[in-house]
Each structure stands twice: as structure tokens, then as C-alpha cells.
Image 1 (cartoon, rainbow, N blue to C red):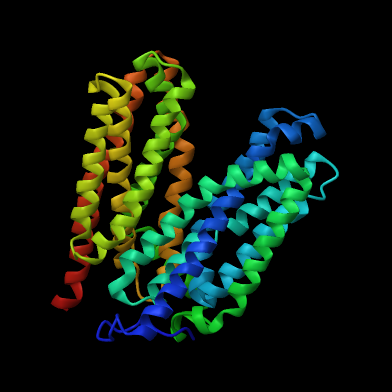
Image 2 (cartoon, rainbow, N blue to C red):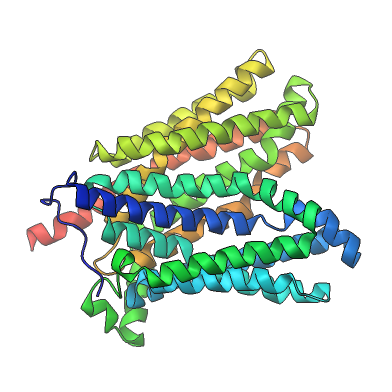
Length: 420
């Protein structure tokens, strides 16, 4: 069995516990960055793939769609495996599947092979959030949980930044097949290290009871989670914030280009500023989350502030430079909420069900990312660039109400044992 969560009574600043915690956090953060590197390893090389296989961007897009569809479906249910067999084993297996599929793509003789391999890669990618959060929740001292979650999110952001740079450099210098071979071997090496790191990441399930669950108990437990109001509200929370984030990345540049009458490439600097601010906010949010118990207030304040800043940046800013600053501040405000959000979800998890809780709730990221183009693109199609920005801000503001629901449900659930 995995060692239990370090006792809150243990000295979090003792050298041994501190070194152990940061080794765990660093290992999981690196794994998360690898997941994000693989998610965007193909787009930088699309022109090379087009030249070799003579296929359209629509066909290439279908490969990404297959990947994310498989990842979203898998993420919903893979948490059951995390709780039953332990986060380390599932994380190593998922990373091996993801890296192995990417490696196999390098040897694909025909384009049709990309789709089934993308599905395998997507299922491999589905393990990261459930396994990562279960390991961090179980293995890191409670006094450092916020920082652990923030560094995990920061690792993912760094992966998004590095992927297009590294893969495009390798792809155009050595060829897309060599680039994918290097990426695949890197992932397999990391999967091997994680599998062997049992002393650091644990040997099995978090509890003996969870390890002994049969199919009937697993199905019943999952069914109970699906009807828990707080759990469903948390799923909506992740879906809405993912919609807003995807909306900014996909449509903010086009909207600001129209609003300020500037070229599209210049307008994309606002998205870059938002993402840079988001990364800074993520790191700062870990310290904020560790310094308070009112995580719902941190999340609500950050999202509502971001909504106001986006409205100001999209409608009230007199110049594009002012909009750039406001978008950076909006990204920071959203980033600060990241660790607080993850701790809120951790508090909702039934005993022994951390993996499946994060798996279920984090499937909202995929749902929100799929809904964003259908929702916010409509405004641009109808010549209303302001509406895109207002729509994104409205989604963030409404998420504050969802947070209030989650907090109310969680308090009601916590009061039940006390009355019994």
C-alpha cells in the first residue's frame, strides 16, 4: 500500500520531509509537462506531414480530435484504476502508452494509421490528472498541498510553451519522423523512471479497502459520485473555466484585432500576455492556497476579477497597449485560482476515491474545450467582436455562483457525520 498522507502534526520543514516533498512535486510536475508537450507535438509539423502524405488540414485536425475525444472519455473513468492500483503504476502505464503511440507514429507508412494511434495516445494521456493529483494529495505534506498543485499546473503550462519550439526545431532540422522518435524515447524513459520510483511515489493503492473493491463496489461508488450535487457542480466549474480559457486562446486575438483595428499578429500578443500572466499567477496561487483555508473565496475573487479585467480590456481600454496590460492581469487573476480550485476538489473526494474524483471532475476540461468554439465563435461570425470578450467574461463571472454552490454542498455534507 502507499504510505498515507503525511500527518499534519509532522514537521513540514524538517529537511527530510521537505526534500521528499519537493522530489515528489518535481517528478509529477515534469510528468505533467511531458503530457502537454505530447499534446502539441504534431501541429508544429503539420506542413511536413501535408507534404509527405498529401492530406488536408481537416484530416490533420481529425487526428487531434480523436486524441482529445479518447483522452476525455478515458479521464472520466481512469480514476477508478488509480484508486485501485495506485497512481504510480497507472501514471507509468499511461505515459508509456502515450509515448509508445507517438514513437509508433514515426514509423507509420500511411496516414490512416495516425487515427488509431492517436486514440491510443489519447487514452494514455487520460491518466495524468487523476494519477497526478492522487499522488500529490497522498504523498505531499498538507502544508505544501497548494504549492504542489500550483507547480503541477505550472509544469503543464511550460509544456505548452516548449512543445511548438522544440518539436518544430527538431522536425525541420532532422525530419518529423526523427523528431517523434526523440519525443517517444524521452517519454518512455520518463515512464520507466516513474515505474521504478516506488519508494518515492508509493507501491500500490491508497488504502487496503480500495484495493479490494470488486466491479460491483466500483460501479456503485462511481454511481454515487455521479449524483453528488457538489461533484456535478465541480464538473460544471471545470467546464466553464475551460470554456473561458479556450475562448481566450482561440478568439481573443481576432476580437481585439477588430476592436482596435490592428493586424492579427499584433493582436496575438494579448493572448501571449494572458498566458504569461496565467503562469505567474499559478505559481503565486500555490502560496496563497497554503496560507488560507477559505479556498472558495480565493477562487471566487480571482475569477470575478478576471471577468472585470477582460471586459475592461475588450471594451473600455482606449489603446491596444492598455488592453495588453489588462489581459495580462486577467491571466494572473485566473492563475491565482488554480491551486485553490484543486484543493476544493480534493476536499470533495470521498475516502479512497481521490483518483476517480479528479478524473470525473477534470473531464470538464475536455468538455469546455469542445464547447468554446461553438459558443464564442458565433459572435465573430456575426460581426460582434465585443460579444466574444463579454461572453468569456460572463462565463467566468457565472462560475463564481457555481463555486458558492460547491461550498454550500460541501458544508452540508460535512455536517452530516456531526449530526449522526
